[in-house]
Every structure is written in structure tokens, then in C-alpha cells.
Image (cartoon, rainbow, N blue to C red; front, side, top):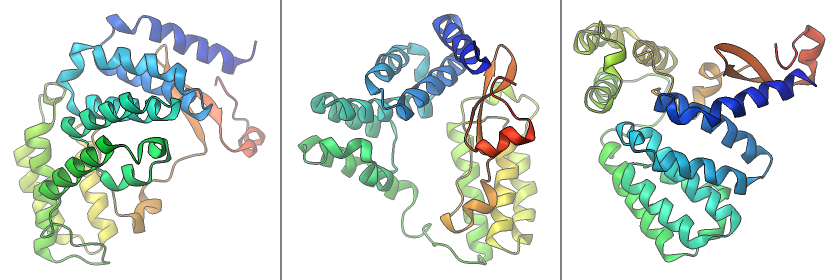
Amino acid sequence: MPMRTLGWLALLAALAGAQQAPVEQKYEETQKLVHRYWEEQQFAKALPLLEELRRDPRLLQFPEYRSNVLYNLACGYSRVGDKARAVEMLKESARAGISNFKHAETDKDLDNIRNEAGYKEALDRMRALAAFWDGPPLASGFRERLTEEEKITGLSKSWAEVKYNFAWFDNVPDLNWDALYVEYMRKARQANTMLEYYRLLRELCARLKAGHTYITPPREIREQLDFKPPLRTGLIEGKVLVLELLDPALEGDGVRCGL
């Protein structure tokens, strides 16, 4: 049996016992399997996993996880033709905090519900939430260099979002977020380019040691910051294993699934 198959069997076994696992682990393992089903266009198989995760009361402790699950459910129900349920989940995801209306407007997973009345209602709520967090005074757009006021504003916004919404401070008990804010204010002023500035913000964000808390850079510099190797990995039984090679040339370098 190929190692790749063994890897997925291990993942399925872990998922079967995830009810007793921490909700963060359950979320990660579920999302990995859902992503696989999505790539295979097996949306009906992904939906029960997402519904089980949605019903887990512990998910209420993690608003970002919950809103993502709800949005993915909207996409899945749209794909299988259950328009009423898709609209219901999309509206609920908007109430839970999803605000990226631009992504929703172009997401092909939602094409089946574009003409549904509830779709517009959900998008309007997303726009309102986005305007609250990213109104015109903060939406300066991409430029090679930022003013000092813009640097401090962006840093302050990142600090405030974490200060009042980050759920895992218990995992970093020695972290003084306010002290880091003061420290990075000086560093932010010294950043010469937009690229340097976003590297600095990501450096600050990394101090939280949370993989699902991140800084999204502007599209113009994303490739310089978000380079990823052409393979997919997963944490299986405490080990990072290669699950899929996205570039066959890697096999020539000795990279194999299951290693």
C-alpha cells in the first residue's frame, strides 16, 4: 500500500477520535480533509464534517474558526444545490464576522445562489462590517512608501485587533502585547518600503505563535512574502508528512509522499 494512502488513513483515524481532542486540533484535521474533498469535487462528503464542527459548542470560543466553517458550509450547500441552506449559512457567516465581500462576490462556490434574495442581504452585511474596520480613512491603497501616520495607523489597527479579539493569550503567558506595540512603533517608523513594513507586521504577528492569526499583505507584494513550496504537508501522529506533491519534479530531488 502506498505511503500516501497510509497517511490519509492515519488522518481519517485521527479525525474519528477528534471529538475528544482540543477544538483547535479538531478544526485543523477537519479542514485538511474538507480541503481534499473540495479538490476532488466531493462536496457532499465535506458537508457532514463541517456540520459536525459547526455543532461543537467549543467552537464558540474561536470566532474566526466558526465564521470560516459557516462560510465553507454556505459554499458547500451552494455546490450541491441546496440554495436555502446555502443562503442561511452565508447570512450566519456574515453575522459571525465574515467581512470579505469582495471574495464572496467572485467565489465560484456561491454562483448557484447569486439570484437568491438572502444572498444580497448577506453581502450587504459583509460590506457594512468591512466599512467599519476598513473605512476610507484607513484604505490608503498600495504605494511603495507609506507616510509615518499610515505606518502607525496600520500598526495600531493590528495591535487593537489582537488586543481585543485574540483568543489564545493563555498559550503565550510571557508575551506582553502592549510592550511589543511600543517596541514595534519605533521599528515601524524606520521601515523604508511597503515590503519592509509588512515583513515587520508579520514578524510582530509571529510572536503570538498562532498559525491562524496572520497579516495579509497587498496583492502587489504578496508573492515576495507568501512563497510556498509546491507540496502539501500534514501533521500526522506528531510528525510532519508530505501528503501531496504539486510539482512532479520534486520526485527527482528525492521528495516522496509519506516522508
